Amino acid sequence: MAVFGKPKSVTCTCYEIGHTWTPSCLYASVDVAFVVFKQALKVYGTLYTVAGILKKRDLKYFKEKILKEIAQSVLFLTTNGTLFISFFCIWRQLTGYYSSYCTFLCGIPACALSVSVERADRRGLLAIYMANVATETAYRMVLSRGWIKPVKHGEVLLFSVASAIYLYFFRKGRLPDQTKSALSFLVGKEELPITEKREEPTPRRHGNRLLNQLTQNETFQRINTSLQSTPKHWLCQHSYGCVHYVVKSFVKMFGLGFLVQGGVKLLGALPRMHKNPKAILHALIHQDNFRLGAFLGCFSAIFKTVNCLLRWLRNKDSETYGLLGGFLAGWSMLWYKSSTIALYTAYKLAEVLYFKGITRGFLPYIRCADIIIYSLSTAFVFHVAVLEPHNLRPAYWSFLLKVTGNRFSMMNRKLLEPLYKDAAKIAPDYWPDYDMRYTSLTRDTVLHKS
Image 1 (spheres, rainbow, N blue to C red):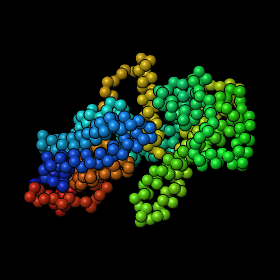
Image 2: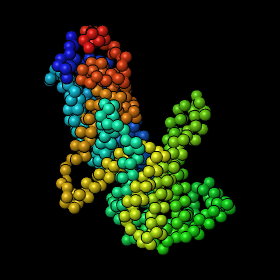
Image 3: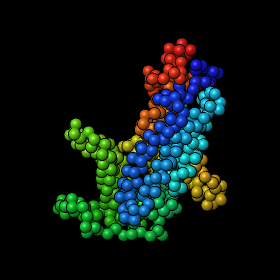
Image 4: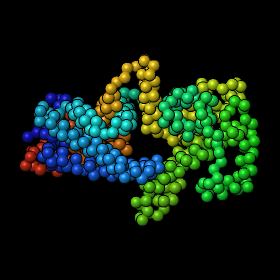
């Protein structure tokens, strides 16, 4: 019979708390491994195929490399899920109880071993992503406990500060090539230092038919010519007038954001198309499409406006313009608030600054830092997923449910309420369908003891 131990521990079995769908620890681990494997195959199969197409990989990649990369990532995710539940059971067998910290301790070795299986070039990305999720989760936890009050537009402020520092280094030309390339696409190579090699913009002779028809439109040509002839400061590196430079950037990035978000919405609407044909139209004109477009368009346009304006006002150029331009451009996130984007940007910036510190001898190089960060962050997120899943980012909780075939929701969190009073908040009426040959625990006995 399961009994409650000390106030901060419970002595229920791993069947009663964790794998409530089966009393066998071995079968539970095998079952989770099989479910996670199937879902991981779908996730990474789609991810690598789409990424390969978008990156215009050659036929050799699809013949020789893609299956190996998919298999390695599938093995990583499958190992992560399987080891976590296995260590959960091993803890109970060794100690005879569960405490508020045991899921975190079980998660660390499970995550460390699994991420070691993954490709080295993906570990850093996984570490940053999970540090992002863990930080947001911790913030949700302290908010739910009433320890702090939410900061109005906090994610926008964080993004603005990170953008300011990023674009300062961009103006100095001191960013990793991949980051520099991404920012060049967003705000233009024209804002790089003069010593950086710039390619002069050349008109495309062949392109999208719709775009060609638009540019051949007489009204469009008249407006474009008028904008091109606007004044340009002698220090500006762009080809035409400053107004043309800003407007063109806004239109380009607005269109990109609209198309990207519209494509995501459209893919989500396709399964519902046969039941609701209007779902396609709603996906195409969804307000999020306009919001992402406005966010990207305003970010690029504001940054360029500030740099051009300061060159006109001060009659000189300076990389410090990137600080002000980046900070003001960051507030364009008011159109499309996203704590995920803000945190990811901040963590990527921290990574850039860390490696700069290593290069200059200010900071030590920590071997396996990506594995350490991933393990601690993911173990913490798993800990919250067990004890207080209502404080997880909804999208990540949905991912955990999907990848485990809903097994994470089958935990009997009523039994964990001595550890955290709101453990069962996400599903207060849920009670597993136990096989009473392996437990005498009932809902009534738990309510009576509590």
